[in-house]
Amino acid sequence: MKKYYFILLFCCIATTLCYSVPPFQIASKRYPIPCDNEQLLFPYESSHDLFTKNSSIERLLFVIHSASYNAKQYYSNGLAMLDEVPAEKNRTLIIAPHFLKTKHVEKISNPDFLYWKVTPFWGSSIGFFENHDIRISAYEVVDTILANLIKSENFPNLREVVIMGHSAGGQMANRYAACNLFEDQIARPNSIHVKYVVMAPSSYVYFSKERPVKGSMTKFAVPEKPDSGYNNWAYGLDNLYSYHRRHHITTDQIIKRYPQKKILYLVGSKDNNGKEETLDKGSAAMPQGPNRLVRGRLYYNYLRYLYGDEIKGRQYFLIVKNMGHWGKGLMTSPACLKFVFKHDTKGK
Image 1 (tube, rainbow, N blue to C red):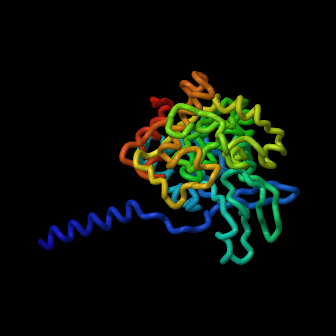
Image 2 (image 1 turned 120 degrees about the horizontal axis):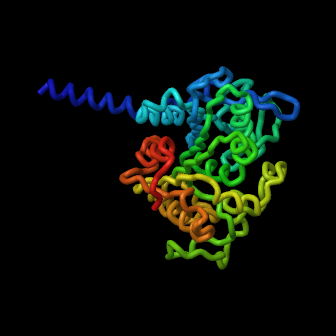
Image 3 (image 1 turned 90 degrees about the horizontal axis):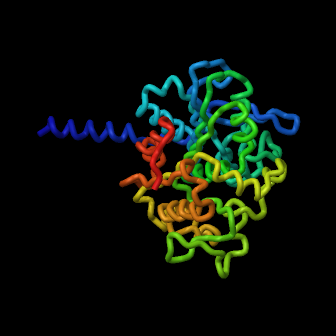
């Protein structure tokens, strides 16, 4: 009897270790970001040195954390993906950026890294560095890191960039795909393919003033009595942020470019709790659906309604069976691994 008890105890301990969440810590590395004649430092984790030449790397996984703000966890999730496809380990670079807020530095004296006063996932430019305000969008940070990786020629055989995010990170992946400068201005001229994985975000950016008609999964119309800000960025395209204005990114450009993006939308079949704590329940989010699962299905139906066959072969929506709101589970799912590493999948 004791033998079986110890076996059971060992299994429980092993399971706990395998699925334990790394404690919250500031990412250990710092990336220099030039801004207004000074050098900002941005925290991140990476699987390889970004400043040393490496001819083996062919793919970059840029893994954006959720509102847990635990970049180490999502870096670990990226490593778990490679455990599922060992042949890709030497060819794949993982970068896990750490977008921090003021609350994360309250107990740190003289923090030497960039953080934001408001939620950074939508591209806000209200940052802070070394005791003074900085006007820089999180999207500009991503643009800079990705562009520098290519321009540095440290990774001369890099051919693919995958930008992926879960939950709040999924919100960022969705919005960044809609408006970034990197893909058109840097990646494509250098024959580098860009793909996005948008996993279970709390909300999405819509490209018109239409929203799902209540009670229908396929009908869309302008709400009869909408909240006054329901179509503001990043729920819609009204009142774009300073990132867009600074780089002359217009609503027409965003609408035109989005269907050209290669995107996989993923959500768990059990991610259907409309009372889940981190779900956006604001008046601008609720017209998108009652929970993450429904919002994902409605959004993909909206894209097909808006763009028709234009998104065929480029954008896919998949439901991961028996999966809740779990980043690692979605990232290591067969659907995600196939899209990231085998370049194809089957949409629903």
